[in-house]
Length: 211
Image (tube, rainbow, N blue to C red; front, side):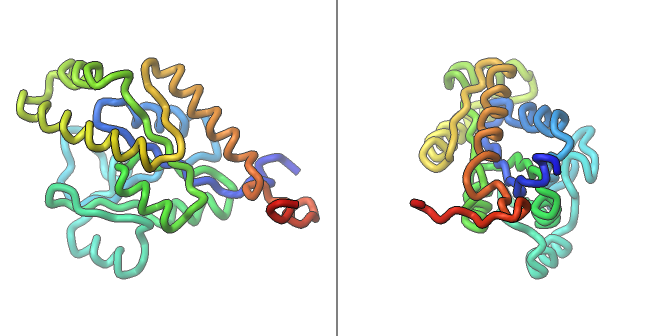
């Protein structure tokens, strides 16, 4: 019996302000773990640039999104700037059946919604080394107007304050390798946590709390 068969599924939520590097960390984690699956969000907004349906997002119209809500096919959803975004329940069901890891790259509001439905979900907030460094990274992109950068920085400060209060772990992304190492350490520890190891697979009963 492999150790993987003893692990229950794990929901890993990554959130951060735009420009902090959470998507890079999420993609790197999924590429490094055969049992990890990236949760591709559903959205009603139009594709941008080179975005591909089923890879970057599942692009649907408002009616299809509404039907997904009615059929309880989303573990969380929200309206952002006039468009709707949500996370498919199918990804969660799949990792729970296989003992794998579902990786969510979503905002704090979505992360907290997932944790309300699944209290065992692991929430990791990725922080920039400083707000000044975050602004530098946004400017380095060369795709944002001055007004857009100001709005993003205001939103980032609010999200950092919210995430720092609400999330289980805080990872500072000063360098990608260091931040990724901390993310790996978090997942390793969480998968060994009591309650996440399926003792029934060994013919044992789970220990009661305090025993």
